[in-house]
Every structure is written in structure tokens, then in C-alpha cells.
Length: 488
Image: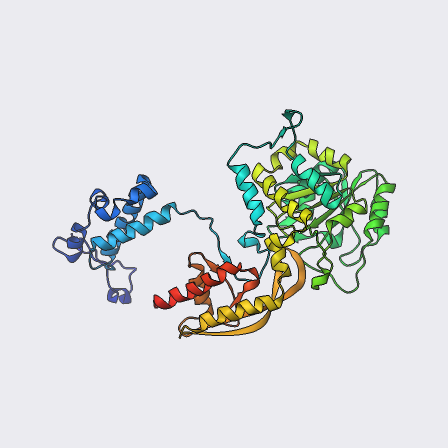
């Protein structure tokens, strides 16, 4: 087989570039290709003998074919100049292991963002994981009334807990807060109107927009007031025979400051009552504990809204509550019963694992054991404690010749669309490397096992230990040691 002639579209400079080796009789490429073992030959090697039991025949065969195909391509392109059976064995081992590895894996969160949406938001408490595991691996009384020996309701498990925790008459749980808002509007306002302040027509991540949710729910949106000022009279003037719901939304991921006005919650309750309307409040993050002592203001609590007689309150389970992803609908018995009867409730309800994790998390609140909830433990960790850990880590990293470390003051943030513009003081470990930029170092740590997620500012790699579990400090140090020993 002769080499192809250059086509008219090829430039003169392309003639000077190395051309791929062509499989010509007697050429080095053909010689190498002949040395490639077959799939069966390679699988018969002793080094791969025990691998099939761990990864399975199918994954092992596919990995072997993938490695051999890559070798053929490398030989044909001139990138490979030798065939090593031992190297092929190692590549097959790596490829086979990667093929069966689960893609969802734990990471070390060194970003200082407590409720990092991309990293799964709130880590579960150990008690929640243990309860979830017990329920997951056995049968349970998910929808079975043990006292009466008949079918029960799955929301009974959380209903009683939220009644005790925040004074709710009834509570339902769906798969997230967007679903909670949508379901409530569909059940309570379909075919009618929902009145919302223009300053509360918010968008939260993932294109969750209040106007879109209203539209999809079958309710017509009636906007009142302006972006920065909405008075009670604006709501009152908009009420008509089609009005079903007054809606109040906490703008959890942004703040409007300055010349602003908003009716008091009690005024909204009174207006809704006078007109026979439902007052629905979306609190977003679902804070149960006052953050003001930590210097974080204006994050509304669930209990005061219910005590003020708001009809329906919705919030997330995996944000400031510190539990699993869930949308919690709580409030008065009558509107909650209407929501429960909606056919969409069955489509949006949560499974036994979510209920188990949520039940255990709420139980920790009732026992007053907030330190057992990772989110609250991180929020309440004092700067001095973080600084002490940062100093110890800096000492470990500073022993490596190519790494320079300094400690600096910084800020941790809540994340997850909570407490916008507010932060917690922290102490940061700032790292520079003699051969790598901060961006390169960040990428290398992402490839660690477990991956370490950091942030970069002004060509410094920053580690905020507020969001790192204490037993992970040593893992960070070992990751840098591995980079050093590998000469990377």
C-alpha cells in the first residue's frame, strides 16, 4: 500500500509536518501491530486473572478492547514506538476499575461555601445516615399504622415532628421546594389569581422563576407594587373575585436595600383573612434557628410565620435545616388537606429514605443537639478554632520545598441561595507552588482521590477549613505530599 498523495487543499507547510505511519509491509508500524496480543491472550495473563472476579467479565473485556484500540491508534499515528505487555496489563487494570467506579463520589469541600449547591448542599448528620440505613435495608412501617393494623399515611412520620418543632397543624413533604410551591399553587389557586409583589418575582438557580411556576400551576399572576416598595394598599386594591392566594416570597439569594417598603406579615395575614384568601409564604432556605447572634440578619424563621397564622409555608429541607433534599409544606390543616388531595402530590412525594433522613434530622432539633447537624456545626465554628486547624495544616504543607503557604483572614459564605451578601469570618490557608499556577494546582487537587475542591483568588489557591471535616485535614496534606513525591 503506497502513501496517499497530497491533495490540492494541503498547504506547503503541511508537507513538513510528520505524517502518520502507514501499514506498509515491512514498516515499523506493521511490525508493532503484529505484536499486539488478542483480547483472549491478554485476558489469559496471570496478572489479570483475579481482576474478573472484582469487576466482572463484561467490564474487563470492554476495558481490554478499549486499551488495545488505543494502542492501535497510537501505533498508526506514530505516537507509540513499542508494545509492552506489562504496560498493557496495567492499563487494562486501570480502565477496568474506572469502568465500574461509581460516578457520584464524596469530595472534600475546602471552598468555605457551607451549602454548596454543586457539592450536594447539606451533609447529613450521622444519626440521619444511620436511621436511613436501617430503613433502607429492611421493611418499614412507611404507610402502615402499627397501632390499628391498617394502611397509614407516609407523611404521619414527619407531621408530628413539625407540629412539635414549629407548631404546625399539618405538614407534607415533596421532593424539593420548587415542587412544594408549584403543588401549593396548583391545589389552591388553579384557575384563579395569585397576587405577588414585583419585588418578590425572583429567580433562584436552575431557572426557578416565580412567574413561570405560577403559569405552570394554572394560576394567573397579578403583580403589585414596585421592585423596591410595595404597600398593603397595593395588595388590597388588586383583590377581586378571581383572587385565590396572596403570596409572599423571601428573596433568599439577593437583597434590596435603601428606599424599600414591605407590609408586615401580620398585616398580610389580616388582609387575607378579611377577604377569605389563602396566604402562602415561600421562605426558601427554611431557617429554624436565629442567625442574628452570628451577625447574619434578615433570614426569616419558620415558626414565627406559623405563629402569625400564615396559612401555608414552604421551604427546603437541604439548606439551613441541614437535612435531605425535600420541599416542606407546612401550615393550617384545611389548605394542607386540599394540597394532599391533589393528584400531583403522589407524583411529587418523597420516598422512605428521604423521610427517614428528615425525621432523624428534625429529631436532633427537638433534642437540642445542633452540633450533630454538620451544617449548624460549620456555621457555629468560631474563627479561632478554624485558625488553629489552618495553622497546623500550614505547618504540614510548609515542609514541602516547592510550596509556599501563608495564612490570611477571609470569609465563609452560606451558599444555597441563603443569606445573600452576608458572611462568616474565617482563616484561610493560601498556597502557591513553584512550578504550578493556582489554576493548575486546583485542577490537580480535583483529580485527587477523594477530589479536593478549592477556590482560587489572585493566583493563590485558598483552603477554607470551615467546610472541611476535621478528619479530612490530613487528607489534604497527603494530597500535596503525593503531588510532591510523584514529581508533578
